[in-house]
Length: 175
Image (cartoon, rainbow, N blue to C red; front, side, top):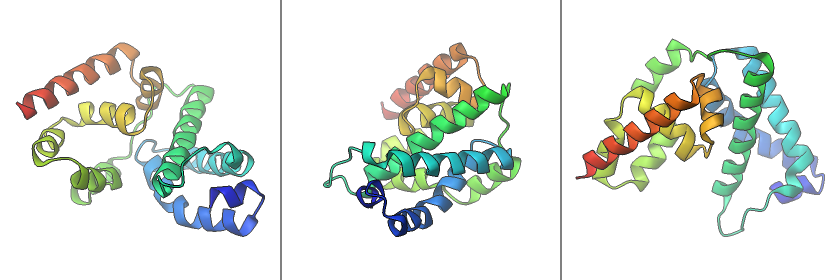
């Protein structure tokens, strides 16, 4: 679908938006409680996709997973840029999202349940929310320490410390 978008196919772009915007909106809302900022980032993300679809280099064997990862990377970096430009000291995730995530597993958790073996899944589930959010940003979202720090509103040293504590907790959970 991204190849069609790269050729300027507007119906393909509309279909891509229809298929991915709901998921992307929820994922952005989990990281930022400012609805206006999330809406702005979502719009900027799809504008970038429209303009840069020809830069997508996913393989046809990888399927939609690599396209979705590419889209999320654009959105995550747009959100980080928005935090930087507005000089937000610390984004505060909405409390409602945390309550819902306790009841309804996130898309990442559903995928991880199918991929991780039971010991690793138990160790992952046992991480504190602070450690989980750092690992999620760095490992699942592919963000750097600096990008994770901006996204979570933490000093880089805190991100590094939490990442180390999370790795040690996972290692301990697997032994």
